[in-house]
Every structure is written in structure tokens, then in C-alpha cells.
Length: 580
Image (cartoon, rainbow, N blue to C red; front, side, top):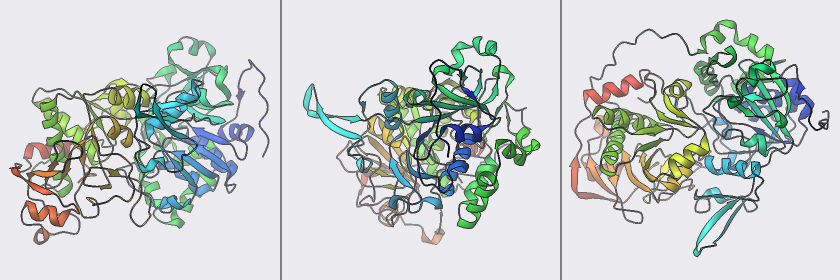
């Protein structure tokens, strides 16, 4: 492997023939390489990293989440360690990926897990030249603290020694990879929000940025839009063109410089999930799309012109869908989502929350449905997603939380810091809506490890949300999910007000007090249970469908049956039945 050349001061970046040329010229074995996480991860550059360092097990890679085509990091054997907040799959719904069953034991790579905001705050500290970042996320009170003895410090609060402050060491990669819309030959890179972690890694990287863009344009084009430059030329070591460089993820361009945006390739994402269920098919997928690909141009050729054209965004209006059928009985998941939406809507009305932070999964479906139910009653509440979408009006028919279709229908597009920081942590009128793989009677949440040691996904932004604002947790009840003791404490339950199951709502007066079942709707058949297996009454439901020893309120209210109107709204949002 060639060593990286020293870059003279005040020079133009190296203009590479493509991502592979760029990576081979600048990245060294043993490097810490950062993949910047907007909603358009630099996947062409990551694929090139995997090809260049396959089998070396040498690199440290930091990125907010490992999912979709980033599974190539595991399959290539290029990586020794990953620093992140999420490892798994996100489409069509969040779930574990078989590649990472033994992740807790260091296979296929060593892992260092953070919450999304704390991870971003570490980049910000490095970018600002600060010795530490402070965070309000309760990392030290959860199992996220493990393995961070040199990176996470709990110190006395200087104004109140009875309290403590959490300090985080800066995150300083050597090289940051970034994919933008366009750039000039001087290296000024244009990107369009939502920006996720934004440009912080570009300033945090000790050596600088390797950037791919959809097109390199004349200097005059960029000079006419200085407000769109996200990464300045002085930070850019090397630059290349890589059309569809974020594929299979999406890119929003705003039509700048005549460049078309593109949507997430849902079919491609589904194929990755399917392939990773078996080691042989996973290896075959890697060889077809990464290891056996000569260049990014070869990758585009394999995609084919028709497929590439089908992803163009904004796209022509689709043919109208037939009206959703809200008749018939709800499924277990649909009843859960509707009960979650009712709980959220009621809390908004009672307590005046102005923002819903929607966590990915059944939780975001409940948040979206709640906002629609409230709007029908003339009550407005803003819906936000952690990567920077605020005041969302999600497009019906697309259930992916981070779709560019929803970005186009948002009133504000920003990043992680503005959303998990400004709209959530600094906003007492925000209500978090979360999911859980395990939840205990104190509402502490596990989304990291199963009892047998298998990996789930990690925190993402859940710890940050649960640490700072009131929350509702929406999760199907079972003895394996509603547990007396967690396998791993990912997110604290201190601020969780309600836990919503498929048969009713558990509520408590406040942290440290016991939950009680306060509303009841007879459950419907679900996975592995027929009508004859359903519990007879609320006490039996708590006993048979949870591992909790909690009571039923003396003021238990009966939930009305799921209505045709609620089901119609939900099925309009989810016509394919991903959450059915």
C-alpha cells in the first residue's frame, strides 16, 4: 500500500479518477477513517476502502450507523474496529443482522458504541479544538459506559458538587470521507440538508477530507452559491466524481447545478437484508457488488440505466393509489400502533407538547399516526427525526423514517445537533416516542444485546432522547420483551411516562413509582398465538404476556375498539403492510 503524500499548504486538492484512486492514494493501513453520516453516506468511497484493504483487519472506521451497504465493512475483513451508535438493518424496519450475532465478542470486528448525539458531540469537540465535550446523555448510568474508561469521564459539577458532569474526549479520525452534491476544482464541496452530523468530521479529521460528488463543476458555479458550501477547500485533500455515490442510500440535491437527486433503492436494501441471512449468500452479494467490482463506473454499469433512472428524485407523480381499506379486524401490530398513537395524542392534549421525536420502528408509526389524528382535531404538533428532519409531514405510502420524500415535506431541514440537541434536549415540550427490544419495570430499555449474547442494534439516538425528555415507549408485550431485569441497559427509563402494549397502556405517577395497567383493550391474535390462546382479562394479560409483576389500576379504563378511521389512516400510511 502506498503511503499518503504530504500535502503542501494552500494547494488545490488531488483530482482523482474515481473513489478507488482516491482511497489508494491517501488511506494507509491502520488508519482511522471516518464515513460522514448525512442521509447520503459516502458509500462509493466506503466500497473502495473495502476493496483496497480487504482482509487486512487493520482499519478503524467511525460512522454513526452500520447498515445497508456498509455491511461490506464486515464482509471485506478490512476493519479491526468500528466506532458507531447502531449496527443492524433499518429497512423496512429496524432489526438485527445475522452478520453481527457475535459482535459483543468482537466478531467480525471490535465495537465501540455511543449514542448518536454523544458521538456527534465528540466530533464537535475535535472540530472546535476543545479538550472535552459535555453531554446530557446518561451514558454513565447505562451499560454504554463500558469500555470507555479513557473516553468518558464523570466529574463533579463545578457549581454543585452533589451533581456530576459527563465529559467526552474528542473523536479525531485521520481521514474523513464525505459525499456531496457538487464541488469545484478548488475543493469547495456543496451539500444539501438534512445533514446528519454535518461538517463536524471535516474539521475534526487531523489530515482532512476525501470527497466524492455527483459532479465537479466550474469554479463560477460554486462561487454563485457560497451559502451551500458545507466543506471548504482548505479541508479537502482529494476529490473525485462519483455519480450515485451514496447508493443504495439517497441524495437530496435541491436541483443545484442541474444535478438530479435520487431516492433510497429499497429493492437493493431488501436484497442486502435477504443476502445477509446466510454466510454464503452474504459473501456472494459482497463479491457481486463490492469485492468483484473494478471501479465505481463498473458498479454503475451493473446497476443499469433503467434502475438508475427509476431512482431519480423528485420523480413524476405516481398513479393514485386505491383508497386504503380500513375494514376488518386490526392485526396485533396495528392495534399496538393505534394504541400508541392514542397515548401520544392524549399526552399532547393534556401537557402541551409541541414536538414529537419519532424513534424508528413501530414508535415512528405511532408518532406519525398521532400527529394525523391530532391534526384532524385542529391540534398541531411537530414531528422530528434524529438526522435533521423537523416539522415533518410524512408522505403516505413510504414508511421509511429517513426517506427523502419526507425531507421534501418538512418545514425545516438541519442536522443531529439541531434536532437531538435543540429540538429535543433543550426543549421541555418535546415528547420522545421510542421502541424497545427489552423493557424492565422501571422502563429502562435494551436495544443492544439478547440474553443469549446475540447482538440487536444499539442505541442510535434513543439514549439521548430518553435521557432528556418525557417519553412514551411502544412495544409488543411478551415475557421476553417485558422483562424483570434487562440483559443490557441501553437507555434510561427515568423520563418514560407510559409504556404502550397491544392490550393497553401502563402508566406511573413518576420515576421511581410502579407502573400500573391503566387502560385495556382485549388483545388480538399475534405471532404464535391463536384466538384460543389469548388471555382472559387484564390481570391475565399482564401475567401471561409480560414478565412484570405490576398491578392493574383500580381506575382501569376500557379502550374503544380500533376504529375504521384509525385503520384507514394507518393503512394509507403503510399500504404494503410492513408494520402489519
